[in-house]
Image 1 (cartoon, rainbow, N blue to C red):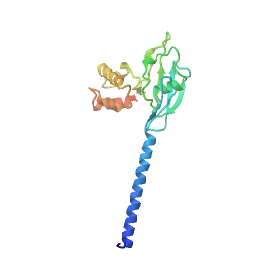
Image 2: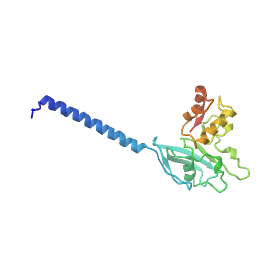
Image 3: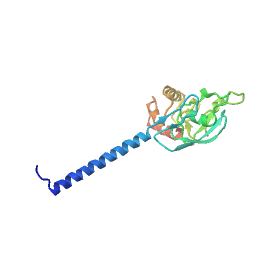
Image 4: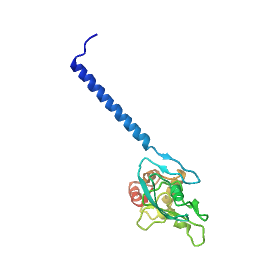
Length: 194
């Protein structure tokens, strides 16, 4: 058997170390991806929370026809349904059909659960201040119509697009809606939140 010189041994050892480091890095990256995949749980009964790849928390204001209105911290990737459950659940007079319970929450979002009581307005669902962001998950045609470049027809197309997909995770998905170009997308990014 031929003898291996010191130089060859050094080269083989260096290659082995490099391969080992590449393998460890790949394993570490793979492990990080597994830990960051979305893990969602929840049920119609509420109480489940969703954790997404973004990590961190979102703080939302839950108001309207819920048992314990207030400001709550939830894991990033949580849904409107999770926020309602965290606020003690909907009251008996809540009109849950008026809001998208599957919409993802955004930091600083207000979730308004409308009531069927006389004097309570269902249109208040998702209401925002004049210059604040509009929640894409609960936006009405009237709210979308206030955005530059969006008319009533495009607003209805956006609502239809959102409802067909059971909600939208990001504003960028709206570039798939007919009639929305780059300038309109900029206006949407400025005025909408997921």
